[in-house]
Length: 201
Image (cartoon, rainbow, N blue to C red; front, top):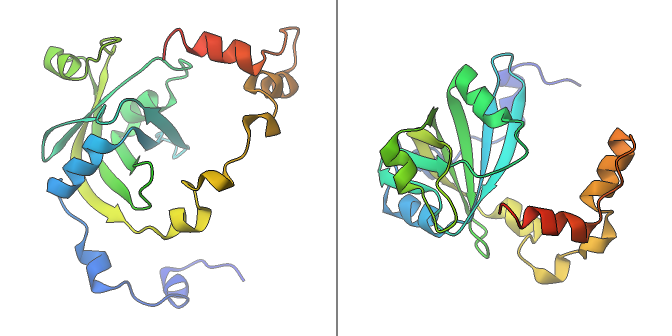
């Protein structure tokens, strides 16, 4: 049976607990700010004007996402594949959803907000690190923030090293792309890829 109404959907679930509703904040508090300062990874979800969706991981040293105030986040744009999916989506809809992860901690932090690509000199300077100044910064005006419960990461045992798989269990990225795309370009080994990545990490 297909679920095609909010009423039919809600009939399957109990009402959300009061604290689950009340935990959503309009701005970042001390706990959210601390979580972001410790986080080395954020997943940025965005949507194009035609509602095509995208989720892109962004990583750096812990605290690479800056919090100039309780209503603002700055995400530096590091070198990537130059598809610019996230940035083009932001230009079209100006909306992002963020999921911050903290290694070893099963709770995550969700932040939603309005976003713009910024080349403001102060934003760039604030997001500089020892390696580079970003070409631009994603400036996010926070609309909501809340801590997400630990159940998903507990179920996945994501941080349990005993559950980690060796990289060799999958072909290299280059080998998989060779199969997917074809062409005459030789398949890049994992070692070759890591050497290439090291040039602009």
